[in-house]
Image (cartoon, rainbow, N blue to C red; front, side, top):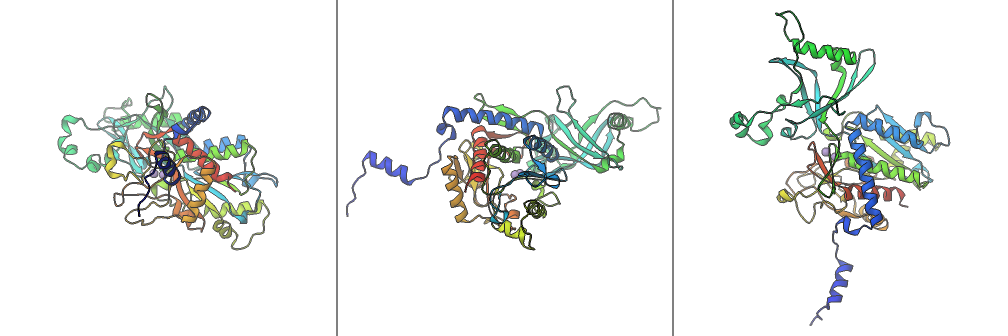
Length: 480
Ligand code: MN
Ligand code: MN
């Protein structure tokens, strides 16, 4: 049998019809949408500059939600349709009630608002060689060498024993001092650092934060007078004593604002884009639903979770049962009949996106990526069927039926998306909150912004990808 050679036109047509290609988002947008991308990126930068901790994220989002008319579930009256629940100031749920009863299922976009950082220990303050430092314990997966010899800021809360809360932010305003972690000069580093594995070159117990250097005028035999000076300063400014730091959560994060990156300003650089890129996208999607007065068919929930970076344990993390509590509160609010299995029934009928970032292929480290199946920067939100490591271990591995539905929704809404996973098989891996949502029986899949330098103090995202993440979540909420 002989086969007819395709003409150029036939080849082009067949290729277009049958093959799947990834195109750069920027080449597919008209001028108006390009402008939308830039406007979105500006508002996003303001968010990640203002919200560097989980508590600050909750405060920021809760205040914006309040302005839009969201009311706390506990204080809501019968007709309120914009609802929120604040979980200990560290997680937040924003809810837009849909037309359908809750038992038809809800739509959830779940992101996390904690980010890798350096926390203070409970007894942090010490003096050595006439300088005062704070002892730390890092939080989440950091490369410790990223955190030395750079300006850092300090964000957090101190609770006094009478319950009074003291908020502390040092290092963000232009005239604020910053703090820093010293590094060894290269002249003396060849043995203690140079000969070591990079992961061991900066030991965790040397991540000590420099905070003071003036000795207090005191009798000659007095010891630790620089430390006493710092404690006095803290007391004069915040009314706290050393023991108050036992009941404090103080986070050391990179100082400064999120910035445009590149001569053409194509990227946003900043701290905590894992996962606040997805947080902001789901928040912006809910806002758009409200601004356009579109009451969704199904109740739309944006969940902003704490503790993802340390495994989602704890009563503000995705492994806690707070989602059940939210659904019972909602059922009471909508006056739907509550049976013993109500929350479980709602969840089993629900659809969710585990909104978390993925690794974009770094041109300098292409060898850890699999080019055909890892996310390309600038090519849209990345849909990730499974995460995990060593043969999908601990992965949610979303069902094909669900992926079929979601790509239909996105294609219909002209969302530019790609499908991929995080790195080569057996190269490493990671997890998200997807499996904890799946535990409830709902359909859930990972989808989020591709990043470069993930978990570094200065993470990079393409503006077009940030915008497509928002469009994808909006389409998900709006879909029938
Ligand atoms: Mn993440
Ligand atoms: Mn992470």
